[in-house]
Image (cartoon, rainbow over all chains, first blue to last red; front, side, top):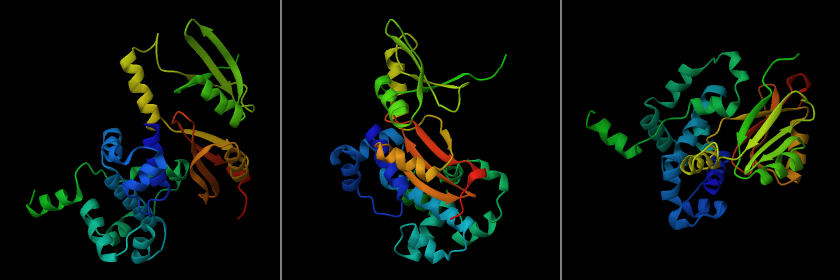
Length: 142
Length: 140
């Protein structure tokens, strides 16, 4: 469990990087065969989906706290295509990056008292189902 | 007489290992270390905080049954325990010293909110944030 946490911490520290199971298994010393299932059992969602939540969380923070272009934010958070970023962002958060940016500008200064990682986590999307499932449900009007 | 919170406890996987970490690597000092049968009451103190103790406790009997103890150890190991915050004079210098001792960092020092902060974990999985005192924030 402690080793799985290590892998999770590494993803947190560099969510813009690629984290295939092979790499996660290597940094944590857990076998590749068991990694994904063990991770999901420990943290409630599979590693690739967890990574996605961290990337979206970081993207939301950059949208809110900086003036970087949406394209720049997409690349900085690990996407290779602006189109994919926009689509995935919308699928997961329900809004477009620019809409989120417009809405979230101007946070209260008191939030400076809250440790940054907690603040960040408050904006992390809750992804208990796969993005593809979300898209399917949305298409079916659920 | 001074009133207030005197001890706050952390759950650790192994008290000897925790001692080596908090005292050996972070520079805390042992306050109380007494055994009552198999139960060990172990607390440490930050040298600058003589009125506060951090308890380093191991899940298990007589407080917890085996199943509960296992659950607690798993919670600690997966980093689910509450966040802890260490305030320091100079974040980068403190982290440099800790890194030299082999402390595992989750986040390298970053300048933001008018100060510097970083993050590390103890061997058990308890997560700490290190925050530099704002009045002494250094200009970059």
